[in-house]
Length: 137
Figure 1 (cartoon, rainbow, N blue to C red):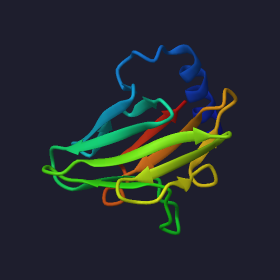
Figure 2: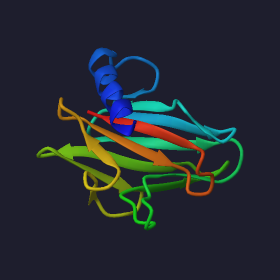
Figure 3: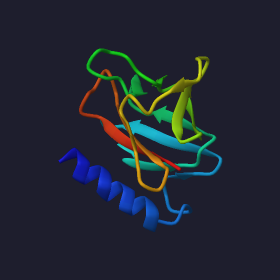
């Protein structure tokens, strides 16, 4: 099922123009509100920062795996946005949470797509039903 969803996202990434809502050139804003991320799929240019904002308490945007390890983890509250940087170098995806080190992500929750872009699923570690996807190209 996950493969079908990721392939559908890959096809969508190839057909949706970058100027649509939820795209980032060179930076992007996303919102955590009512226990959901908006937009649920965000298109990010390689070399861009994504900033998350909250209107209802504390949230995270994290690709944490079952062991609690992650490639990026942006915590944000009503008064303080969270940020992370995403870039593709030599066919690999890298991410950096604000104030952290640049880490290679493609072995985590990132999926390489046929066009060289990556789909990166993320959740709120405090509210695991909050989820979203970044399409980094």
